[in-house]
Each structure stands twice: as structure tokens, then as C-alpha cells.
Image (cartoon, rainbow over all chains, first blue to last red; front, top):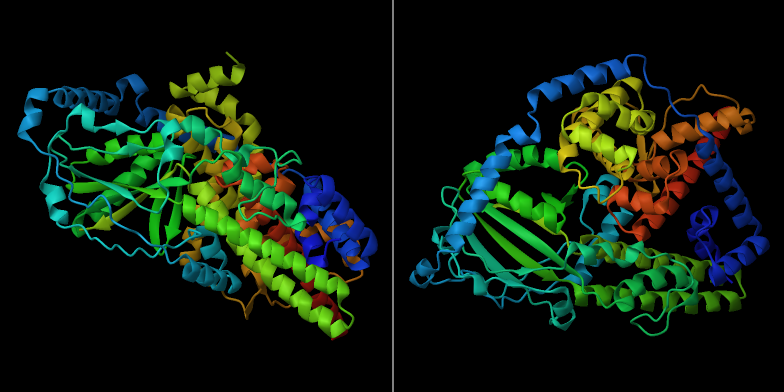
Length: 412
Length: 197
């Protein structure tokens, strides 16, 4: 049977009819047996009902008229798409780029140089970060919980780039056979040891020549098939990576484990680092903000260690990247592929292990004889559940970042 | 082509009338979200209009991969949160004391001239208390309560709007409702103490 903590964690799911099978049975069993939890559930249900029944708020009298006037103003300022100069400049730039890439006779004159070593090793101080995250969340900083990335990475770059400035100077085209697109079926064979593949490009805003070698990540179709769109019903297998899965965490673990185990999809995200001179950083940021207005609802600005980072899908990123190139500002763009599969697996394993510990503690609780002993065990269970909650947030953050690009602006 | 798709096509050509038809059913909903997030009609009106202007300006790039409603709600959520952040920098909180409660909710200890605790159980008063309690939630919790319990959106829709996973949505809704419950219970305690004095 569930403990009170476990029952409380599931009250919302119960109210919203999201509990099923064994979990539902165990929850109802606890509610029948526990007067305190039953009262809490009744109270919560009545509060939710009050919210459900709240009346829709009427629009102010002049709302529609004011909006209409503003829409008309916008319409007169914005030309229709076929008169939009940006469309044509973008087309012209694209045609020129294709033409230049096709100049094969120029290719032997240039040699691609990587300014950043391919096999740079990154290590993540994940344990330390998790502890820090747990502490921050315990201190109840609401805004950081909303804004902060769930995982802060400490990068230990063991092979720093030899000459960053070479990347700025380099502006050569590359032959087509160097550009390699990773097909979705290739991805599962990839090493997931935490190695990053780093591609460096130099962009001269005045010239369309560029050197590109990058692996393009999973397609949007794969992204659309992400497990968090699967129904969380009892059909999902619970064979977690850690082996035994605690039945008390059936639903959460099923969902989390299925994300990796169900289809073995790796957890790949992308970091796009745009480096620009300090005096041009604000100008570039403002230009990007202006451009983002065209992508309302398709991007997210998150706060990672005090830095504003723009997270977008692959499709939006390629359009934004083109735009950034066309601003005329001298900058470099480095795309870093981040394979978080191992990290993800570790977090899921830890979460599963915590689940096992919670089950063991619950058994101890059932056998406890004195109130003092029960209180102590309940406190430990609450602490373990809190730790697991934090881990799950980290896991979900990784899932949220899967296949997405995070754009960082940095100064040279 | 469905009626909505036809209207979207017209909107991409800058047709204001088509746009107004398209957003007709969303105006009250967006205004409602803004009102509950920001707490007053004027700001809610400004923000809601800003939302629709953004939708109008960026509808050319609307790829129709998500549904129109989740796209509009997403923009509404983002604009509300941006506005609150801007305001936070400008506002000086002028109350006697604040208490940082669990999950970051802020309880403001203010002298209350409200109803007798016994009366609070009456539905209308409870509704007012619930509304006040929602105002006191932190932004993350407030938005999920509004989207889920007031607007009645599904977990999947909310995940799409907030661009996070289903698991995150479930967790946030649970924590938000717990926070709401705690605020209500603490308020009841405060009123009891006030009454005793």
C-alpha cells in the first residue's frame, strides 16, 4: 500500500483521471484507509472544482475596437510576402551560395582546417550539479525554477582550441563530399561516450563563402515521435535500465524508462555558440530579438547560469543561422553536438535506485512499532522522494532539449 | 480546405478581417489568462492585444505543425511571463513582510479586514479566497493552474504550450495544486488567529 507521501504525489493525477491499473488500486486503497489523506483529497477536489467553474472574464468594452486599429496599423506597415524584400534577399543569397559551392575547380585551392580539435573530451560534474540544483530548489527560488536550465554543466575542456582566431580568418568553401548528413538509422550506432563532435565555421558577413562540416541530427519526424507523446497507460513496459523497478513508481518510471528503453533513441542536443566582438554583442542580440518576433511560439528563451539562451527546433535554427550570417556582423558560429545519452541513462538508473530505496523504507515503515521510529522513517522517505523529484526534473530537461538547438552568444 | 485553414491563408496575406474572425473564439480565453496572471484589467488588455498583434505579425511563419490554439496559448503564456519579469524589475514591493514558503510561493502578511472564518466556507467566499490564493502562486505554478483548472486544457496541450515534457507537466500541476492548498490553509489559520485577537 502507498505511504501518505506517495498518495499525496498522486492526488492530482487521480483528480485528473490519469491513474490506472495497479497504481489506481493502491491509491484508492490508501485513501480508504487514511482519514487524513481522504480529507486532503476532498479539499483538493473542491478547490479544483471551484477553479473549473470560474466564469469566463468579459472583454473590456473597447478591446475589439482598439485591437482592430492596431491590426490595421500593422497591416499598413508590413508588406505582403510577395513584396517582402527579405524574401528576395534570402533567395538571392541562397542562389549565390549554391553557385559558389558548385565551383569545384576552386575547391583544391583551399584546405579545410579545423580550428577546434575533433576529439575534445568533456566531462560533466553531474553529481555536484545535482546537489547544487537540489539545494537551489530547496531554497525555493521560484524564478530560477522557471528560468533556469535544469542542468548546469561544468565543462572541463581537456584539449582547448589551438587558435580560435584562425576560425575568424578562415572563409573557404568545402567540397560536397565533406558535408555529411547523418541518416536517422545511423544514429543508434554512434558512440555515446560523451565525446563531442565540434564543427567550426567562419562567417564573413560580406562574403557567402563558408566552410561547413557538420553532422545533422535527427529529423523532425523522429522528433515528432518522441516518447512523451505516448499514452502513459499500463501497456508501457517497465523494464528500466536499473533492472528492478519499484511498483510504487510504476507510472513515472514507465514513462521515463520508455523514453530510452522503448525505442533506444539517444539523447542528442545541439549547442550553437555565436562568438562576436564585445562591442557588437548587444547589436547582434537585438537583431536576433527582432527576428524572433517572426517565430512567436516557436522558440524558448531559457536562463543557463545567468546567460540568456535561445532554444529552437532544428528547422527554426537553420533559418536563424542564415539570418545571423546575413547581418553583416563579423562573427563565428560553432555547432556542438551534445550526446547526453550516457548522462540520461545514469540519471534514469539513479532514479530507479532511489525508487528501490523508497520501497525498502516503506517496508520498514510498515514494520515500525514506535511513533518516533515511524516519524524518522517518514522523514527519510520524504527526503528520498525529494531527491528523486529533482532527478526527474533533470531527466525531463534532457528530454525537453532532445533534438533542439540552444543558441549562446559569447564575446571573443 | 477547412474554414480555419482558409482563414489562416488569408491572414498570411494580411487580411485583418479574416484574422479577427480567426481569433474570435480565443479573445476571451487569452484575456482571461492575462487577467489571472497580471491581476488587473488594464494590463491584461494591453498584454492580450500584444499577443494578438504578435500572432498577426508572425502568422506568415506559422507552420501548422502544432494546432493554432496551442500556438496562440504559447504566445500568450510567453508574453504574460515576459511582462511579469519586466514588471518585477520596476516594482518595489511595499508591504510589511514577506515569507518565502515552500516551492517559492510568497505569503504576504497583511492585516486582513475580510470575512469571519466561518463564513469562508461559503462557496462564493471560497471562490474569492481561491482567486486570491492563485494570485499568490509563483509564476510557474500560476500558469499551470490557469491552463489546467481554469481553461481546462489537457496535459498534452499544456506540454505543447509550455514546450516541456508530459512528466514535467504532471509534476508541476501536482506541486501547483499543493501550493494552492497550502496557501488556502495558511490563510485560514491567519484568519483564525486574527479572529482570536
